[in-house]
Image 1 (spheres, helix red, strand yellow):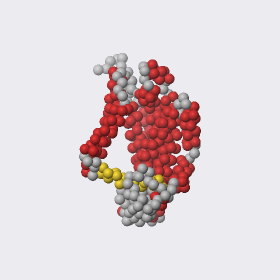
Image 2 (cartoon, one colour):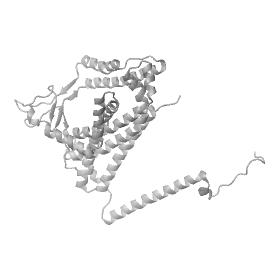
Image 3 (cartoon, rainbow, N blue to C red):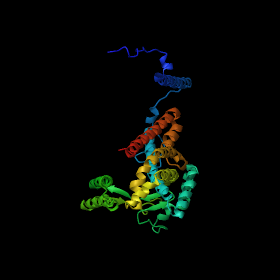
Image 4 (tube, rainbow, N blue to C red):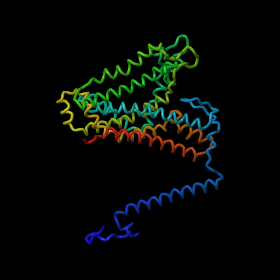
Length: 406
């Protein structure tokens, strides 16, 4: 029911889309969207016209053709008679493998270097500063080539381990470091061996659950539970106990220098190109992460450290339970960008002969089939998907650990 004091209601007029601030931003956004759609439609039409005039058409049939090339490292079965699609999948898995290893290693190196840069020990602090400045100011491609050159020039050849009287012995009877790569034992699982593996995975989950419970108990009641040795017991004891109770169902296939005259047989061979790319990306990116960690720690008020010390907490607990949880809100956002850069920089693998997706789909497959547009589109789609996935996962984690007001 209206009264005489109520202002008269105004009908909507088109001029309000420009003159009224309530609608103006939506108008401009809608116009920008139309222009974007028109630009994409023009580019798509221009591409289709040029392809038609050149007698070409976009087709994905080449993915089912035989690839006719070998790949030096595969995580799934593959040979030269496999399809280009399977070659691309091998490249995807190789890219994901080196990216995961580099992200994990870079995080460990970066956190350690960032904390040590703030050490009261003058020598350690200066060494970490030298590491950060040396690695982040030199292109990552240079470090990839340096590490690969060192591996191929310094490490012995595989022949040193071969023959009845080898010049070198396997390290601990299980490891061999050669200029071709590193040979390590391969675990061989029986059906019961997978039970032991499942128990170990459950133990890892148990460690996180215990540490979370101990932290919550400390925050709620102030009771301090030990973290180190209980975590170690939960991680190791159940798997070891079941390993012996089930009759040692996991064995090791060790590298055998006497099985072949030309190369070591058995075990797992980690290519030198993979190691060079892995460590170069990890050490290079770790230098940037170290600076983010240092900035995050310095962002926490010194009074927090003094208050925790006044309560009797030891320095390592102060760092793990007081400083780092607050510093993560500063560390995590740039860390996401570093993980994305690792994934994208892995495309430099072709420089040392490591066959990632850029080397397979964007290299040999593209050259053999001439399907440049299709291959580049698939490459773009893969890297876009991986980047968005990493961002989504890290943003979920960032929201989970951010400071929440009571």
